[in-house]
Length: 310
Image (cartoon, rainbow, N blue to C red; front, side, top):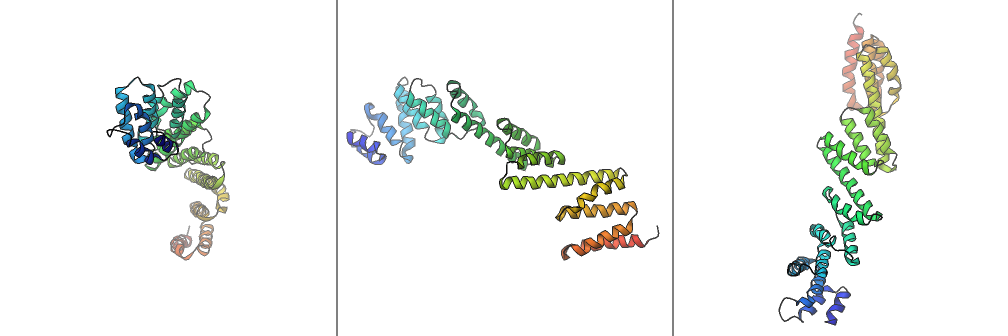
């Protein structure tokens, strides 16, 4: 007996089980040894289900035996699939330090779901100063909400995505991922100004993600201003629109190209065909060959209009 226990204490669980079994008259352990036998067996991953089954049988025969309930609860917490069952058992055992420590560890191991709130609230009511447990739960809920938010966003469910991102922000109002998520929702909804604001907030977290969000915020701001220019032009305020558009033409890349093309179109609408033609001629010279066919078509159209008498 001492040899089997010594092997178990050393973590040599398989050898310990063999040593225990040599002591048994039948294949089943006697009641006096079943607790330590099944607890040792639980240290062998492949035999964990058998250990749980053995402890459950003992618990059914001895429902008021505290040590049996504790052993079963602890053993159930070793596996994620049975961990909640183990937590439920351990939470009912009072005045036992081993059970309390096992319960705490299980709560830290648990992959938290939204419906686990009761488990953590129950523990924190009796252990209000356990910051590690509170942080684990809040962090998990925050992460789950963020993940659900992006999944909803990717499927186009903007209303649900908003709900999840706001839920994450109730845990941490500076959650950059959640702020960015709300920013993307705003952009998808066409609210470029709000999208820019939220992405700017998210970008303050720094790092590579921060740089990405900063660039996206700048893009949103640009296109928000471009939309305002188009709005003014539709209202007939062409010169006002051109004045507002002028700073945007200094943007680089696709943004600058978009601004210049709009500028040429507004000049045409204003009747300033020579200026529109000159601008498109410059764009024709500046852009790569694969884009020139597009500008050539525009140039021909403006050239034709330019030659027509006004």
